[in-house]
Length: 223
Image (cartoon, rainbow, N blue to C red):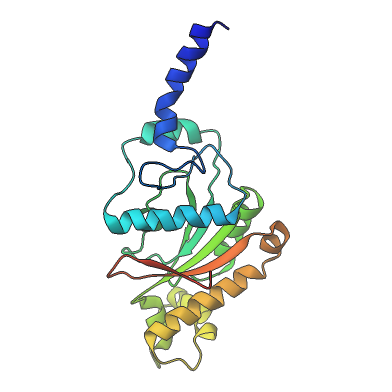
């Protein structure tokens, strides 16, 4: 290959490099972005991406989002998400937004109350066992209606909704304050995931976090 051909090939790659960045390369202002083509194996790198993303979200400095065609082209043959996010289905709680991530960045599992039922655990096993995501984060949120339902004595729910409530109740027993119950539910769910056989075998790290729907801030609990 001639020098000119090599130069031309590098020039053609520049747009993708600037759009998706290097996995650990800082951009202007010291910000960090995930390269959707690279598999991340260090959970601390994954955590940095999430924390940096929430900072961008809070500052109103979100990443470029008109690159969907390029992302689809890259992702058509596979995905390499750097983290698994288990969070609530609440319409105000979208992790791709509050963590400021793009297509292919995070593997998201959402249900009412961010519970660890069989389908959620199976999805986690797929993301950790097959996609090799090194980090799982359970993100609860303020004013969670599902947790509030679990605290409501004598309340009646439909059969399927009651199944959700039943998954939450063991983790919030003898707790009356909603905010305390939300934190207890996050802890309860994280503990269930931590003991999952696939998660243990793969050595994935499980963290807890809380999203404030008023401020938009994600607070990581414990680390």
